[in-house]
Image (cartoon, rainbow, N blue to C red; front, side, top):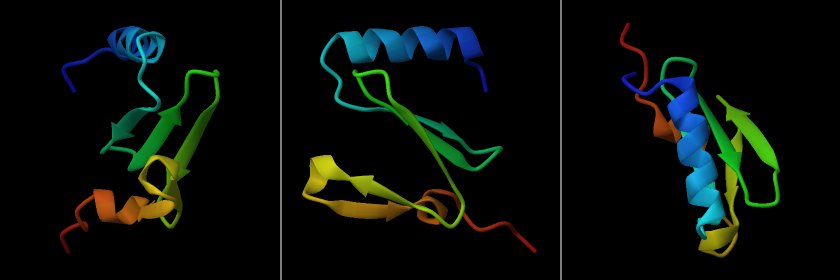
Length: 72
């Protein structure tokens, strides 16, 4: 919450320009994950979707596994 959108865009740019293969922006409020790559692609994943993990030999991670369940 303490990082502005501008700060996060700059951080993403710096990471991807300096060798990072993926930049993950995780939004706990909206419960989404945006993954950017150096080639300019960005994909957003939401609840119920699996994130492919090509850097981990084709594994997958469910978005719902990232966020704790809502308290009832």
